[in-house]
Image 1: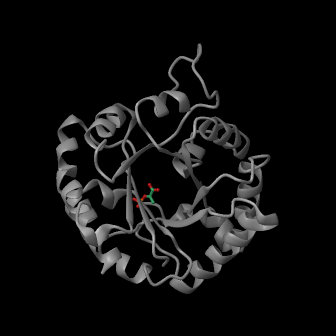
Image 2: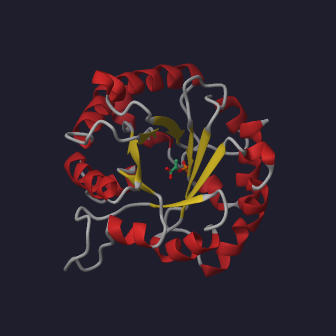
Length: 249
Ligand code: PEP
């Protein structure tokens, strides 16, 4: 692991007004000097974005969205939310290309447009990439990742810092995690592909997929990782606090 660690909490389509106060304990913890190198980013559903942004405004915890629309501004696009609107309520990050959005129809081309919209509004992009189980079995992992990276980042100005979250689709919500040695090799390869031709030089590399309070300690041993994208386990503050503590100690 690197010194500066990012923990991205993806609440997916969970959480209600009642659950907002459950993060109070995490806010208290984030004030401790021990956490100075830990960057927590909550990505709640859109219905809670504003309330999270207001609640976390004076804390060191940031807020992100789980998606944004392809058009960067505002306009007659019923049912969509733009990067500009996210920025307007104080959000700093946006997750793009999550496999659950790819399942809804987001292609690399669409994700590329969303990345343009996000960076135009100075949102930090957390780009999810990952192979499906069949691709993994057929040893197509690197080929799949390379295509996702190259297509999603096509023509994106190279000065941008991109957060690349490697999330094998077969690991999300399943309890299955690649071995540390395999993850280390894949992260190294991803890093080489992303940073090729001196592009995106300050980018960060994360792992996501069934990270929890029981396996985090072992995962922190992986070299070259800048942090984790955590779904299920981030929605329970006690588990999330356990994860945060085990990341530092
Ligand atoms: C995710 O939502 O990106 C994710 C990795 O979920 P989980 O931690 O539940 O596998």
